[in-house]
Image 1 (cartoon, rainbow, N blue to C red):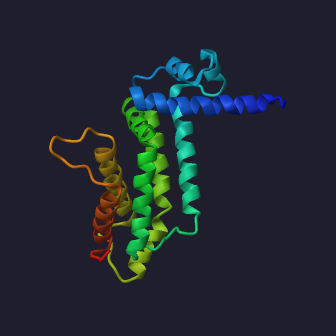
Image 2: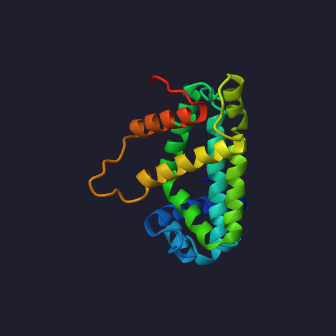
Image 3: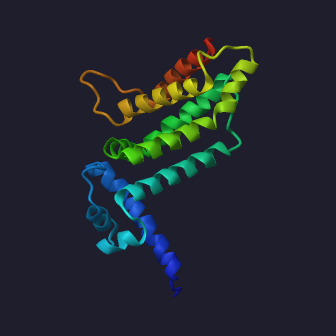
Amino acid sequence: MAVMSRKEKAAGTETALKDAARRVFAEKGYLNTKITDITAEAGRAAGSFYNHFASKEELLEALLVDMAESGDEQALGPDHLSDFSDPAAVRWHVAQYWRFYKEHAATMVALRQAALVSEPFARKLTGFFTAQAADLTGHLDQVTHAGMALPGRTELCLSMMYQLLDNFAATWLVAPTPDGAQPPTDDEAIETLTRFVYRGLTGHDYEG
């Protein structure tokens, strides 16, 4: 029978704590979650938490890094399109963000909650998403290269696009559905967002 090394045990505990945090955040919300809730859910001793994270906020930062790495892996795939003058490229990014948010909804909400109560964390989060958006600068450059006019400076366009996607996803994937409202299907949400973003960036409609 193979014996786990100390390093393997530590990695297993860290993974268990992260997985437990995601589940507890989904059930209780970030602000109402205690470190002992996370360790109990992970089936670990309460003190083991501090062998890996200095605080609940630091664990959340680790979850953010994990999500970013997952997103980067998707961007390296052969189906990634980077020319936003092409609506198919806009659709690819809209679809990725919608599905990403849906998969990580509890953590995305936790990030917002943590930013509300911690100014240093809010600054870190803003800096992180600003850096992520900057990766799309070249995508928008293709719009002007194709002879289309962006509605404003590139960084402002990226900010508006991100805020639209993030708030739309939060409204329909997290917030309670308003009485009488019909939530969109994934395909409907992606199609509507794609058309809106593409027209907003390029001033052109497209036939999907």
